[in-house]
Image (cartoon, rainbow, N blue to C red):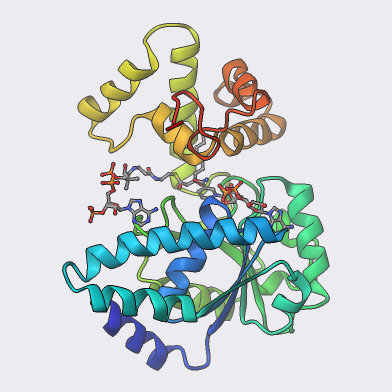
Length: 306
Ligand SMILES: CCCCCCCC(=O)CC(=O)SCCNC(=O)CCNC(=O)[C@H](O)C(C)(C)COP(=O)(O)OP(=O)(O)OC[C@H]1O[C@@H](n2cnc3c(N)ncnc32)[C@H](O)[C@@H]1OP(=O)(O)O
Ligand SMILES: NC(=O)C1=CN([C@@H]2O[C@H](COP(=O)(O)OP(=O)(O)OC[C@H]3O[C@@H](n4cnc5c(N)ncnc54)[C@H](O)[C@@H]3O)[C@@H](O)[C@H]2O)C=CC1
């Protein structure tokens, strides 16, 4: 379906559903989610913690929109510019969290992968957001039920797990907990489809579908490298040419962010200490301690400095 048709169909089919969206966190994921929601016709407010990060998120969105516009409207520069300005016209960015959530149908949280930090955030916005507002987390690995438990709206709470880079990856995992109401679930599915994503549903289990399979694979790749069994480059070449992956596992860990990767593995290790797949990995801890977070910080397993 064309972009325009998707926007029109969404407007017709969800007139009483989600229209206004607040995305909290404007990093790798939040910026992408805000961008695609705005380009799909939703009114979006992106929240960051300071002005500098608001500007950084806006710059990243602008850059990514340029790539999408070039792809969608090929040689038509007028249409490219029209698409970019219409999308930006639906997108606000702010540091004022409480003002942002006062009038919205959906909040999508995309901040650091840490239960306490997520709880602090949801506790703060639960008393401010309207009753009907649905809360969703983009968590990669934490329990949605546990995140939701800090709020008084567990029936209006679910998981919306997007994939990086959001403008390119077609999948959305929609997670319903035992408390998520049918109405909330339906609105989340409509929203995901309105964003042009293919939605799959998964119960609230660790890692849902994709990360339950991907995290052990990435962790094993880092251990292979740590033992010196093969170089980073050769591990990546092997999985690209031998298994058909678009990126090798160490490239992918750099792309996802080594801090996020480490947080996921250590969180699961705390929860499932008997599972050897989730044992801490020294190399990963060391890189993160040195500030080497992968592509976003300019260095990880590889260097991205220009
Ligand atoms: C242990 C813990 C581990 C899990 C941690 C948690 C993670 C999660 O919770 C869930 C996840 O997201 S897992 C990660 C999922 N993502 C992947 O697996 C990405 C794999 N890589 C790729 O698909 C391509 O290399 C990729 C598409 C990235 C780049 O493709 P190429 O190498 O061919 O490079 P390009 O030619 O630059 O790009 C291809 C087309 O995509 C467009 N594009 C890329 N990035 C974009 C972006 N940020 N915004 C907009 N457009 C973008 C690019 O323009 C190009 O388009 P065409 O030229 O028309 O093909
Ligand atoms: N990196 C990835 O490939 C994927 C990550 N995720 C999940 O998405 C979430 C975010 O991950 P990333 O975008 O990679 O992290 P990131 O580190 O790139 O961005 C997080 C952003 O949230 C902001 N932030 C932190 N606390 C905030 C608050 N209270 N209010 C507003 N902004 C706040 C930070 O300033 C930062 O810019 C995590 O839960 C992660 O597990 C999900 C899918 C893929």
